[in-house]
Length: 182
Image (cartoon, rainbow, N blue to C red; front, side, top):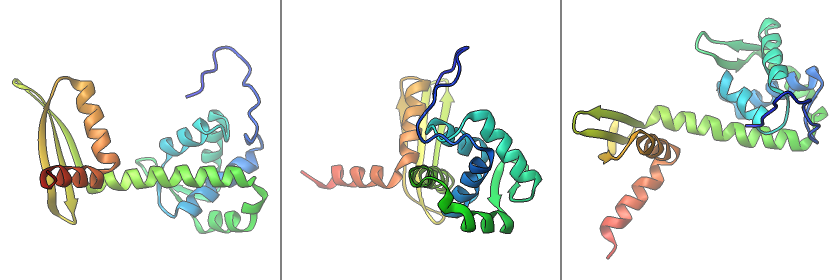
């Protein structure tokens, strides 16, 4: 994440500074991804990709919710309303192509990871014998792969659980390959 310690924010080429453009970018993202998004993850992603300033993003989301263009659930999940969708469809080409391309690419990554986290499980379990990471790759409701590892510390446990959730199918593939290859 960018740091700004008592300095004026440097100009970043491609960064949106107009509030209307920022709101349109948010609507475009929600329309293009086609999935509800966590507000905090979305704001962080847009900010970290230098597409808009953090406080402008927060203000834009609040305005979109207040105007009924975006709906926010009690747990901070954003969905696009019909009026927000219409605005995005009519005005999306006014946004720079690079901003549209970048925000959709990153948005898809976020929603894919979120789906994987919901569809698969990785849990850190602390016992008197040590720290374990328990992982399950699920196919509908059945576990296709389930394992439990004893790890050395909290950091390793967190890293393993996150890596598993990023791509559980790859873990499964490598596990099977290591068992059947000579």
